[in-house]
Each structure stands twice: as C-alpha cells, then as structure tokens.
Length: 219
Image 1 (tube, rainbow, N blue to C red):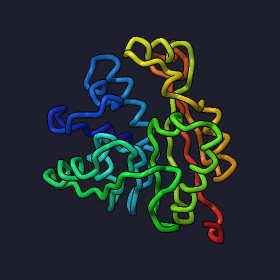
Image 2 (spheres, helix red, strand yellow):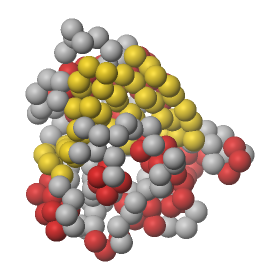
Image 3 (tube, rainbow, N blue to C red):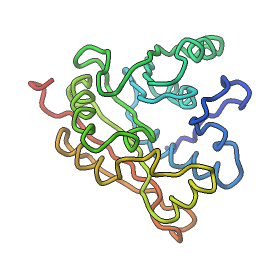
C-alpha cells in the first residue's frame, strides 16, 4: 500500500533554517513535487526496528516514520536537535536526535535496521561519498537497508532551483550517478527508481536507491 507523507500543520514545526526546504512542501504544484519524491523514499523503507534519518532538518518525516518503525533516530549537522526533539516530544513522537556528521556517525556498529538519506548525499563532495557509505554500512545491521533520494540534475532542475533563489552548484556537489557508484561499491543494490512527474514530460527529476548490507561478517 502506498502511504502518503504525513505532514503536520506548518506552524507546528520550529522555524526552519534558511536552507531547510520545509516551506516548499506547502506550496501549490511545487509542494506536490516535494511530497511525492519523499513518498517514494518512505515507501521503500521496511517496517519495524530502528531507523536513522540523516539530515532530519525540521523533523518533517518523523510522523510518517513513526508509522513504520519502533524507534526513530536522527542526525543533522545544522539543526537544533534539542529544540526539534522537544517539539515532537510534545506531540508524543519519540525521536532520539543528535547533532553530527554523516562522515563520522556517533553510533555503534550494526545498530540500525534502516538508514534514510533524503536530499542529503548530493551535498557531499564526490570524494567524501565512499567514507559516508562506509559509515552507513558500519551502523547497519546485516540485511539492513540504505534508502536514499537525490535530485537528477537536468536543465529543468537547475532552472527550478534558480526560481527558488538557489544556485544549484553552490549546494549540490555530487550527481545521482556519483551517489549510485559510491553506494554500489559498498553495498548490494536492491533496486533504483526515478520520479518522473506530469506524465514524464519533464523527464526524471529524482532518483531513489535501495541498497542492502549483505555480508554478516563485515562491519
């Protein structure tokens, strides 16, 4: 069953950081694009166990993750973890949040059943991706899954970001191909898919990858 993104009222979230795309999820047209690409990632996740969301931002996905997992963890380099945790505590959504870096995850080995990275990995330099994937693999349990979503860089995507006030080259350093190569070098590919809205007339705008940690003897 396809599950829709479960959004709170916009005012229930803390005031977002300048780089946080939270407001766009509530816009007409563009909001639909943002929501549907995230839904592809959410619906690729397993049910049950413990999940880590890397780059949790404003906690946008926590209500949806609560419907799928027993325990939610999050790490973010910029977000105020204590403020966001307090918001969701009041809503009865327990989330264990930390400030930290994907390149040095502060978790023990084989801790998570799934790791979710939505619009995070494209912000890394290509030469940092192997280290990020190695850290993800380390904290995943055997048979655990990485699910990621990254933009497909095309002319339309560059123009859309420019309309939103962003120069994409100042924010995105790795392409979807860079991310896929790094993931495949470290984990087993389960499947990949692309998001092609509006009947495909704009082409692929977002790529979703599902990868698995397969060797129990490896970290």
